[in-house]
Length: 428
Image (cartoon, rainbow, N blue to C red; front, side, top):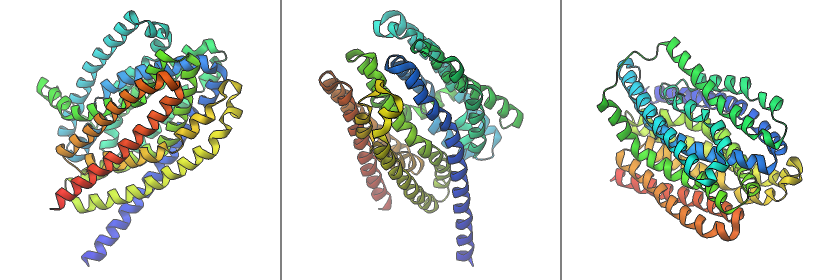
């Protein structure tokens, strides 16, 4: 009887996972549809010059977003998932995290001000950087980690969709020439602000959080627990965002535009499917791991099969469709198909590394495996910095493409190795 009950229970869980995954993929598809339509529109209207400004400013602001997020999207999500329906504990985590992010926002803003005032390259792109700044504020007060932790990520997807549908179409009205790059950057960044406002109102209306004044010790604890994950994210951004900044010193704005365009197409195609699957499985595996390790491991295996199948499909789609990019985007983008070919198989490495890293070492693991997760990105970052600074001055943007692809492969292989090593230690 127990086996029959467990079989029925697992069947229900599988159906729920499938339904949630399909639902989020559809909404993520809607969320990404407008950007995927707008991206080629901006590439065509702004050209490599205008899109190069957007690419550089996004890289700078996303570095600051990294500081503000500080790993909370994983650490706070896991904590909230573990405390379950305990509103008091949930509120304590929530307010301590919000205060920590506010402090980090202040620090990030100061860094941007200093860079614009003192570094020539940043002065050159200052207009675009300032226009993109609302993204930093919005990212600080967008509470996806709360929705994900309490299992309400569907609702967040709806709110995010509403924000995009409301604001992004304005780009078609106001952006027509390369000189409109600041307007384009502003509207894209305001989506984050709008999502933050809507999600904040919704959380207040639903009364998921009660008032709590976090102590300095509460804030320190949240920052301390997130620090290893922040270091991992910082290392990741070295080879995802710093590459664009380095190209800005060695290459033309047009070269930045080509590299940024190819990379953003690849990552958009990748994360439109990977992100909702991660949002479904990461909190569930995290919650199960603290109660039933066997069920958590089984869920991890199901997630691995689904994600790797999806990423394989993405790889072949990019490989086949990439050669048509110059035809669709215009003569200004001649040569982008070569960039796309280099990036075509990167989604497979991203999915592989994500499964064994986030869902394996973090969700299934402990503080020691989280440290292994962090160290993997340290290794990748060191490789990326050395390779980028060596290859980019010689091979320019093409060299940067190869370095990015090689780094993602290294991350995937190291995550797999360390996960297998961890599981062997746990089995003894």
